[in-house]
Length: 122
Image (cartoon, rainbow, N blue to C red):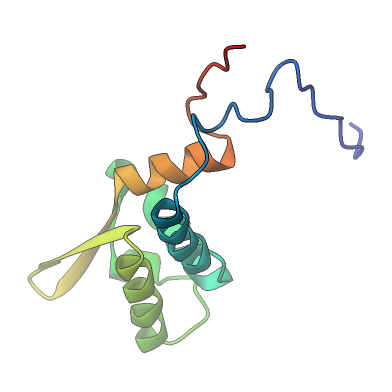
C-alpha cells in the first residue's frame, strides 16, 4: 500500500461538479458557521459520535464517554453545534438527546464532495 497521493482525474470529477452554481453570500455565510463549528476537534468528535449512531441520534450520556473534557464543556460544544444548525436536541426525562439535522449533513456532503454530484454540461 502506497502513501503517495494520486493525482485528481478532472475527467471523472470536473471542477464545478460538486455545486450547480457558486454559493450566494447568504449560503456561504451559513456554510461558514457550520464549518467553523466543526473545526474544533471536540465538536467534530461529538458530532461524529452522534452521526454514527443508529438513526443519527444519541443521548448526551452516551456521547460524552471518552471525550476528555468536563460535562459543562461538552454541553457548551453541543450548544455550538446546535446553534450552527447541525444538531437538534430534545429533553427526555432527565437526559437530552441530540440528533443530526439531515439537511445540514447533506449540504456539507455536497460541498465537500461526498454527496450526489450534478452533471456539468458544455
